[in-house]
Length: 181
Figure (tube, rainbow, N blue to C red):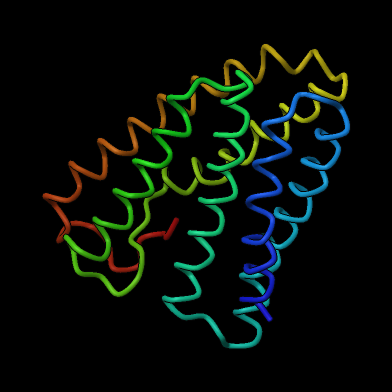
């Protein structure tokens, strides 16, 4: 059941990206609807997996990958329209790639090895697309907030990537139960 919720989010990736690339209010409504479904499925899949005892490293990777694709494709769609600077979806792609490569290939973990800042970034990456959809629907006072948020996310993503590089040289100092992204 949890993987079905995650799969639903994955199925929304391309329609969401398409609606984010369009500038009209109707597309903003469809993007908003897709975003709401994506967030609900993201909030539910973890608790459902834990309650049913179906949590695996594969399901965690599937969840993170679905989140990454949903958010990043939506941001690339918005960047096509000029709603976001290209640097943010490019950096998110680089950070997620670093996260996967670092976890599975360099440190040889069986599951993704997250960080606290990476977790907060992962949550906040959902915000620019919803804010942009609301701005297209007339909530224009959000525009300066969106601009500040986007550039803060650029900065925090760079910091997170730097932390991951620095902590890679100190894996033995990380607690065994370090929070996952």
